[in-house]
Image (cartoon, rainbow, N blue to C red; front, side, top):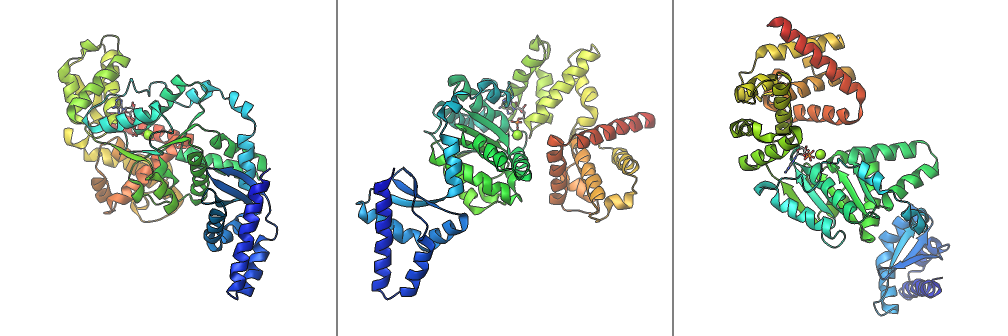
Length: 467
Ligand code: ADP
Ligand code: MG
């Protein structure tokens, strides 16, 4: 196979050599011959490129850097511009073969499995459209309708709680509903990094192969919260490989991020790829959209949504402006409160139900609450307040401090700046970093979940005994 292409490649090598000799570059030719001495097989011909196999990544690097452009030119002129030249490492070539060869394997793809990765309610039907998300919605719908043929990748951007995951998974649902054979893979960047780490840890090549295969076989790859690949160079490198592989094979990629690709602290190659396709943004919903979302969510919560007066929805929508998750959470808490106390759905109950959860500007913020959280944390971690506030980087102190940031923001509704002041005038970005850290841990680490549960319980007990 590929005899013709192999001889074209050999001829290109000869042409290069002869050219160098005619320029009197004998020593360069000696190096050149050494680099290419064992290179004599073709992996594939695809998209008008001949893929030549090289033994390892270092050789590929050398060739790409010093010889690729010239050799590619020779191949082009030998084939009247019909073919170009690329190099691929043996390892990557093997992975591709494994991923591509057993076509019958793909038949075994279990659409139910793909579905299980998606939250059932995160569909296009359940996504309420308004000014701030219309464009993102339209483009997502288009990608879902004709994956691979629209924009690749689709980069969905937006602050936390504005519907990125929902919209991304809606694409997954739609594709699966219309083509049960499609292999839809949903993962978060953290999950990807963890899985990769686990696959490499065993030092068993089969694990790596299984890992790569699971991504290379995707028809639609959804990677959530790509910003969490920051500072994870190995995972970035690995993700980059799949990105290129899938892109070259016309498979659809969708990523979400909390900021523009240009602001991500990740490798430049990846950043530039994120701008190849389409970038859409989920904005802050206006009050009309917030109320529509509340109505939609209400229909999932109670049998007769009309029992909740419009003014209640308006009031809740006026309190939670920047985050749909919080908006939805507040509605759920409110409804649960009224149902469990068999109380009317009225405006007065909003304050009663949401009390501690209300953002700071809606209720008088209590200094006592801050003190109690600090006390509970200090007792729990057996530290004193000085340590909690100090600059010490001891891991248990950093963790306790981050928990404090998280709880003060989540439960007391304090702003980052205010928390900064309470913790020795720290910068708001430091507070945010700590807060994010806990958020990330909460996704995977049950110890952190139980720490928070415990602290919240103690906090409530203290408040009750203070009253
Ligand atoms: P993000 O991934 O951006 O942090 P999510 O996609 O998890 O946010 O959305 C948070 C919550 O808000 C989810 O329950 C989601 O269903 C809901 N949500 C966000 N935007 C909308 C919308 N336009 N319509 C309906 N629900 C929405
Ligand atoms: Mg999300």
